[in-house]
Image (cartoon, rainbow, N blue to C red; front, side, top):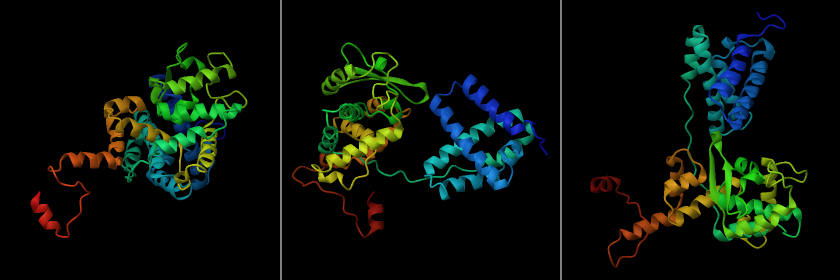
Length: 335
C-alpha cells in the first residue's frame, strides 16, 4: 500500500516520461505534449473510478491489460470517440509503457501483454470536398465592411489557398508573412516541421488591407479574436459555420453538407490534383510526412478516373462506367 505523500512508481515514471523522454530527449512538439497529456488525464481519471482508488495511489502494476482494454472501450462506448481517436490515445499509452519497461524490467511481462493489444482497424471514408463555386460562395459570405467580416474572409481564403490545418492557421503570426511583398506565408506544422507556401494575388490583396487593422508586433497573431489573442479551434469552426449558413442562401448545394476546416483542406488538395500537380508536391504542400497519405485524394476523384479510362478506350467508342457481370467466374477467368 502507498502511504500519504509517497510518490508511486507510476507517478515517478510518468513525470520522467514527459520531462526526460518527451521534452529533453525527443524534443516533442507542443502538440504532441498536449495530446499525450490529455490522454493520461483521461486514463488516470478513468482508473480512479474503475478501480475505486485515488489517482495518488495508482501504481504501474495497475496499468494492466484489463484496465487498458476497459479504458479503450470507455473511449468509444461512453465518450463516443472515433476509432482513429481511440488508436491515437492507445499510441500514447504504448509510448509510455515502452519507456516504463526500460526503467522497470520487472514489469516487462505485464507491459508486453498490454503492448500485444492490436490497434483497431477502420474503414477510411472517401474524402469530402467542395466545388469551386461552393468554395467561392463561402469565401464571399462574410461582410468585408466589418472588422470580423474582413478577418473571416481572409481566414477562409487562407485556408483555401494554403490547405493549412486549423492548428497551423491559428498559429500564424505577423512575422510569418513575407514582407513587404506579402506573397508567401510560413506555416508551423506537426512535429516542428515548417513549410513556406506562396499566396495568390487575391490573398495578398486581402492581407495588405488587413494588416493595418492589427498590432505591428511580430508576435501578433495574424487572425486574432476580438481580444487580440489567437483564435481557438472552436472559434474557427464557428466562423466557418456562420459563413456556410450565409453562403447557402445563394448556393443551395451547401445546405445538406457537413463542412469543417478539414473539408476545405481536402478541397485545396483536390484542386491541386485536378490541376495536374504531382502527388509528391501536394504532399509537401499539405505537410504530409508520407506520400501514401496523399493517395486518398486520388482515390476520391472519380472525374480523373473516368478521364483516365477514356484514354484507354478504342477509337470510336463511347466511354462509360464499368458494368459488373453476373458471371463472376467468367470475369475472373478473363483476367
